[in-house]
Image (tube, rainbow, N blue to C red; front, side, top):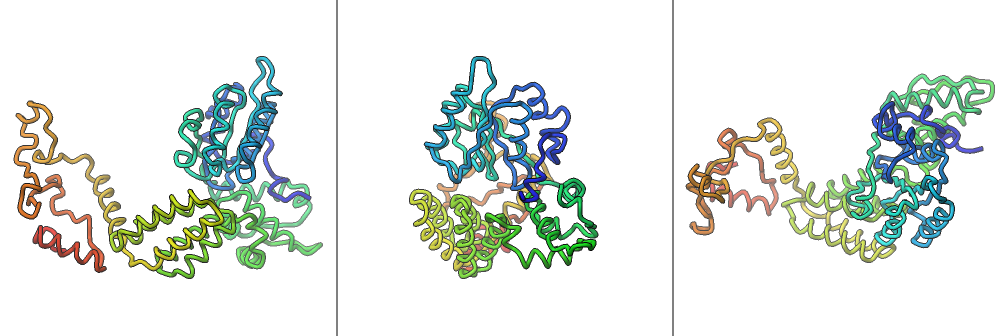
Length: 424
């Protein structure tokens, strides 16, 4: 028997739950299906929100030839062979066959380049699915030929309706006596992923004793899921939980835990670019000015890991992760930009002091733009005692140095230059 998630996969838009901004009445993809005219596009959203299902529904309702490739297991040869098959099925004035590529962010540049000609000539209509920001992962030439549609996480109400729909309509579950008393644990363990939600539901219902009514509670779900973690989390679906543990282990200065979660991600088939990007973020957010070399290390590791590829890239990532985990920590830069953005949102576009405005024209100079500006490099110690903030927020403290050797020196230098203004 097929898994519950496959048995309950929607076959039409009327059965599809969520994404009303794309498939609701009058929405862009609904109209495209009604007219039969739509461009190549990329569906971007978290796991389990219906990207693959939506592509299948579109192809089914439009009755177009439908080809599918997984970027995890397909190479340039597979892409070219599939395009050749699609070309052989396209006749005069017939609609384009659809090529669906799951996890398109995992395609390298050569693989993406192999799609360009077919998309540009209309040999195929491309539908890509990705959990990663396509502006980072899809080459600009291909991205410029595609629309990007963002899929939103499913709401609690939508997830509850998925459970109720499965219990009432699945050919197997509807024959059982099942009552859901509490939904919270089902939703918690699903992480907003519809596929995972149905996997957990199926796992729990498998424990029903014949002739009894199964009452689903939070305690029951937690117990069964923890006993069978691999059942509901096939294929490394704990993507975000493991990534969160990875970052928090770096932040917590625990190299053992950090390299363990690195190994979990590598063994689970995680994209090394995803891992390395999060290391660069951690290097600034959690280490920052306490060790400025951390960002250089993370950036170099990103470049080296991509150049080398797996399996050797794991060694590069391990070195960098251990370096980050054992570095002193500071979030002063992170706090500073958050505080500054909050001030900007609260105060709007405050007037910039005339002294530091640009004055490229005679009229601007007549209006005192740039008047009184002191060029720091002409002053003692390359420092000019001027006010740079708008009048309304003079004295506002945005950057607060942390208590580590590097930032203690920064604090001392700022105090020496600015006296009370940066007295901290």
